[in-house]
Amino acid sequence: MTPIAITFLVLAIVVVWGGLTASVIFLSRQPERAEFPAGGTDDHREDAGPVERDT
Image (tube, rainbow, N blue to C red; front, side):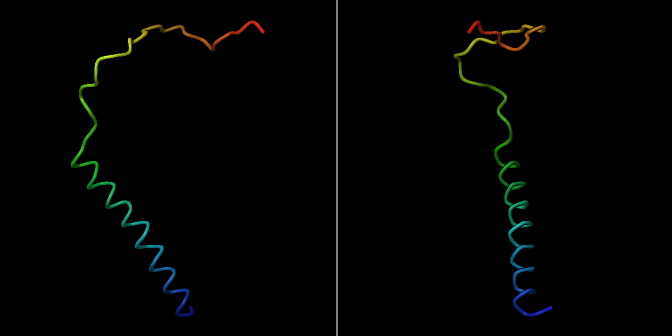
């Protein structure tokens, strides 16, 4: 392998694994919310199909 190929290989590995590491750290510090702000209503329709429009 040429030195430029090795450089790009190392750069790609750092970008991929660095992004994974940053994502894991971010999610460990700010996990998913348990509560959501008041607002929309939840529609508990179990048999909701696709929207049918008369065009």
